[in-house]
Image (cartoon, rainbow, N blue to C red; front, side, top):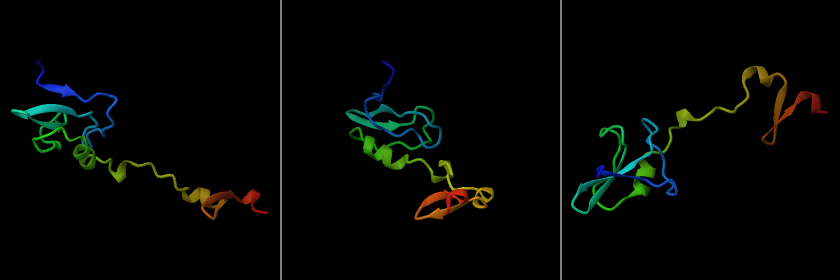
Amino acid sequence: MRGYILVPESVSCNVCKYCGARPIIAMADVAEYVVKCPNSDSHYHTEPGLIDIEDWNLHNIPSANDQVDVAPNKAALDHFFHLNGAIISLANAD
């Protein structure tokens, strides 16, 4: 036996926020389990007990720094303006 169980793909769970790995379920003690990163014990893991995917998901929310900035750049501001949240080309501003 491997000593851990892969979380099935049908279960919605976030990947590790440090390395991007999908978590595993490992036995901690008799009848106690942890959801943890398979790559490092120093990454977040749940408290021993029942399998707690919800706790894993709460602690592995992707960082806002990883999000893509979709705001127009300064050069684009010369040719576009905002109208009630929409970006309109000055050519169509008549």
